Amino acid sequence: MSSSWIDLRSDTVTLPSDEMRRAMASAEVGDDVYGEDPTINRLEARAAEVFGREAAIFVPSGTMGNQIAIKLHTRPGQEILCEERGHIFNYEMAMLGWFSGCIVRPVSAPQGILSWELLASRIAPPSYYVAPTGLIALENTHNMAGGTVTSVAAMEEICARAHERNLPVHLDGARIFNAAVYLGKPVAEITRSFDSVMFCLSKGLGAPVGSMLVGAKDFIQQARSVRKALGGGMRQAGVLAAAGLVALEHGPTRLHEDHATARLLAEGAASIPGISIDLAAVQTNIVIFDVSATGKSSTDIAAALKLQGVLVGTVNPRLIRFVTHVNVSRAQCEQALQKLRAVCKPHASV
Image 1 (spheres, rainbow, N blue to C red):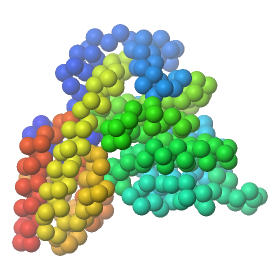
Image 2 (image 1 turned 180 degrees about the vertical axis):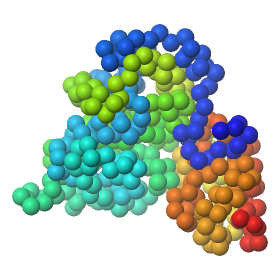
Image 3 (image 1 turned 60 degrees about the vertical axis):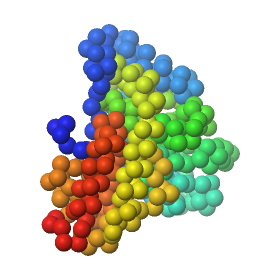
Image 4 (image 1 turned 60 degrees about the horizontal axis):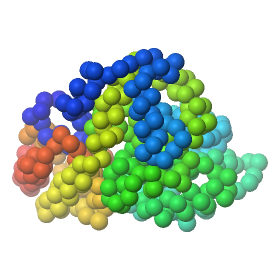
């Protein structure tokens, strides 16, 4: 995508920095399936250290990381509890059914933030004729709730009560560093109670490819076999891990800037007639707002913005999503707002 575009579709569109490109070009590599890629090994060791875990594994995508965890935590015929807008339920191609033989019991939560109170009544009672609950999965930040953050207290209560029932808890932490910035606490502290955590290097942290799954040593050893089954056993992948190391070390330090530009977009959009937005839900780098009162659909507005050089995402015919990231500046966000205001005018052509 040309750099002339203002691309607010997702933080997945970030481009590798010059430092990442230099690191990739000079990366020391080996065969990772044999455990011989030194750059992969350094990345995995560093990720485990940052999260205070015994081990970590590099995977091509967040979806693969989540699905490996689901496979290891469950057995076929079980249910997984997650928020109804959760990524593992809506955007991972039903792989938890295909690969792990599980189904989802979706739970609706205000602003996507689950609590033990909401989950407890949905756990299946012991019975021979219902699917037993096998796993609870949280998402922090919550993508389709608008980047909202679950508190440490809520996460720890869920984990503690679930563990009392011998239920594992997995965290889809694709954007957990954004949550950590919002909460003002290190990721190791806010994720310590989970049985496994997946996080992405390729979203707000800015790497071109890759995610990590962290957990206990035995769990990650088993994850290597499941990764291979999914086709994720890469060879000289150190060229990717080199960029991941730069992302892990430097990416979190600037995420507050993305949160600030998201707040700018949210407040600007809220001032446009016909747009409805819950400003309290804008906590990190995602902004979701309702355009139905403009008399135009989200797809029509997105198409009109594209003609003006602004790329945005749509959630449904009513909702538009903006996501800020390292490759969109404050000035570009201000330009995007100007163009949004113009296309939302009652008589504007869309």
